[in-house]
Image (cartoon, rainbow, N blue to C red; front, side, top):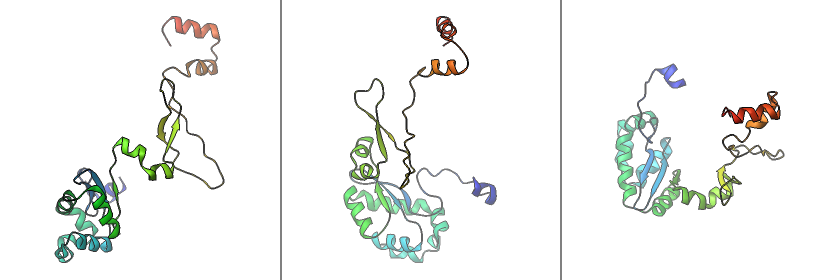
Length: 185
């Protein structure tokens, strides 16, 4: 929004592909998907070496991040071809060796089993009425060394707090019963 207001670029949607660097997108592998972020000249040089395309470094279309973002479709196509020939594990291992940020794109089942997600406590199990097991919900994103943040609560059931709210508004038990009998609540 700031960029639009100040620079008037009127960017158009590019799906998952970054508009300000490249390649920065999601890519299909032989057995899944990965997210890759190449931002900055050092990472771009490592990307060019990784896919064995040194000619990209001298191409003016890819001279800096903004230029790479403007020509991101071509860079994404090259990265897509490289990723498609490999498994997710192979892609991630090669990108790690090249020191290029990347991560697997998980299905919900994979996310629930991911050791990193467990270790980071991104999800928290909450009891939810009607479910046989606690439901995984996104945990509070901010954590402090000395202060516990335990404000996470499940979403209420339909009408769960109706009586409590009506009492706070001054309704007594008879008035609430009348509202219920009349189908108002």
